[in-house]
Image (cartoon, rainbow, N blue to C red; front, side, top):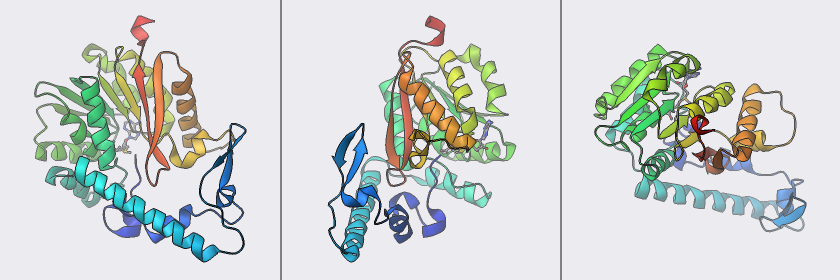
Length: 289
Ligand SMILES: C[S@@+](CC[C@H](N)C(=O)[O-])C[C@H]1O[C@@H](n2cnc3c(N)ncnc32)[C@H](O)[C@@H]1O
């Protein structure tokens, strides 16, 4: 779930690092990052140049230039690797028309999911959290003609919009949306397992349970991807945070990072590098333990 900056820009937010975004991310003069150094594992790491004295105008210019550069790189990467066709754009528009939140993945996320699907030779994909069908289209397109995508969605309204999106993308033959709380739908998928790729992007407090099911419904070599596992760094900090979503995402990160049945990494690829996927390859599936 990548929150796009539609409200701020009125246009495609993945290539819109706005002034607001620059200011939001700008550290305060007291921030360690502003001095050019931060502590990691006890070692001091250099980040940005330091600014001796009062040189805030220069700092702001540098931050703006840096943000502009990231905007241009992001737009160029999308143009080259992940251009959206009419069906993808229509899925987003349909979600907006139906007053659904614009919280779908970014185009580069979609392309990354396709790369991962190709890497594991995906023929069966499970998508947990459908919204308007944007990620489902990217995933379904990574399948062979006789492949199968099952997408789980709690909301009947979202499912109806997603089915129309998949039909427009000509993917109805291989993509099915099942309605209900994912935790209730998952046990019914046992006969259709193993899934080669499982994408988790629904309610955050369900992530650990979805991972548990992903292990049961996968095979060695399957890939499990979960969105929003970085979320501004909050889930990664060793501080207490009462927010249940933050706690759930932190627990998910720690589990996949340490579970010997998985090889995992989280990548900061969204929202100015402040959010992204946790990607895990199944080494030992639950069935083979
Ligand atoms: C972040 S959106 C999914 C975005 C989608 N993956 C995309 O990128 O296009 C999360 C979706 O999960 C659904 N959802 C939330 N809780 C759920 C649950 N317990 N079971 C199934 N779906 C759920 C929401 O209704 C919403 O449509």
